[in-house]
Image (tube, rainbow, N blue to C red; front, side):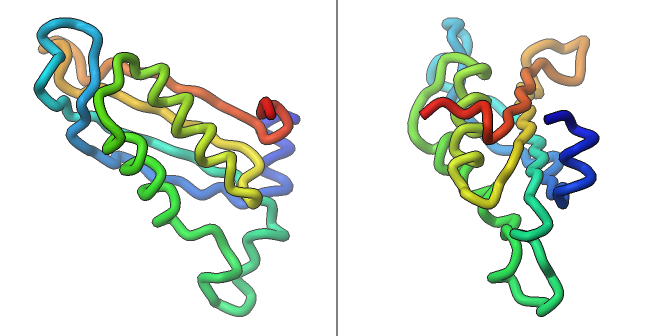
Length: 131
């Protein structure tokens, strides 16, 4: 399944520029001090699970769900690698039975003075989830 198929069959929900202080990093200078991180997420929800016809929140996937998952993962304690955090968030989001696919990007905002951010991005499909 490719993104074109997802865009034909799913509503794309997104969260952009969600910034939190996170205990993350493997290097000595990253230990003990939180770092600003930006989170960008795309969720692909099949139209059957995202029908706003009744104009009721129960009929869609609520955006708060995305923020809650990110906050739970980042509050769980120190994480060494962005890749680990990004993978865990993607897995947690795909555990929602109404989410068909997810793209998660994380970025450390203050690592290097000569660039905006350093980060990682993953794209996962429900079909590719391991049991």
